[in-house]
Image 1: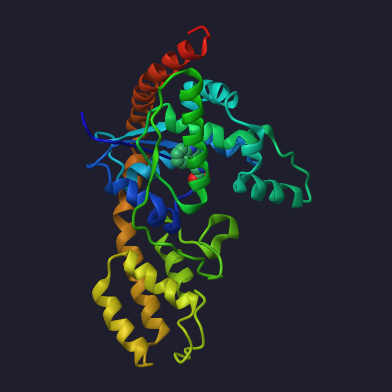
Image 2: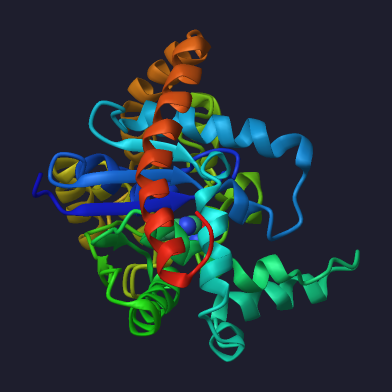
Length: 333
Ligand code: TRP
């Protein structure tokens, strides 16, 4: 087995949208042949910000189902739920003891999220869990001795911390972990349809994103009402129009793009045509995903079986690392 191992987790946010798909999930699907892939749903990380305990479990299962529907192949990759692998949190404790307070305080995501919590009218605590979030992420990665981690810009600092933890651990307890590298791949960034100055994200609200599994009519409506501009092509292309072109590009519609772009350049493009083409592309792309999701929902026993079997596979790998580590640091196994 000489394939390099890739590891990545995604938080159970409730529903995969086009931003998640083109920014991460599509890439996961595509690298399954080339790498030994371990993917996971980070339900423990989801607990670090205010959340509804009644929804976490169903959102986690939903994420598993949607990942399978998008093409994560359980015969090729491991797909686990983080909370089912208690070894991660055991390793988290050990890593907490080789991570400095100072370096965690410098994590920009921690600062951003703390600011968000401080600004809330309903007071929420800034938890120790939020503070050690990146250490849990390091445990996720290192427990499988991953070679590569596909990361977006926002996670680069966490991966750097992971490497620091690996190096420090090795120095203190003996060479054990390798240093995981970022895996940069070509991804299509998408912005909000209703406010193109912001990244496409669920937290902005319904009209800002397109759910991969949402009803066709909803998608159509959102694209039709996407923010564009007044059509003055003497100006630079506006972010809203660019976003629609990017969406077409992400869907692989190169022919449509060259025609529409030609019209844009000559000043004859009707944005309605651009929107119709985009809606058609998105609906065409997502139709098979929706069908597969429905099949999975109709076969929950299969989904449960995959979840159980894959947790078992992940636990076997994780346990081996944890036992080695416990010996190295001098605690009972
Ligand atoms: N923090 C990541 C995010 O929110 C999710 C995550 C958790 C992760 N553990 C990981 C990503 C390990 C890569 C590797 O996107």
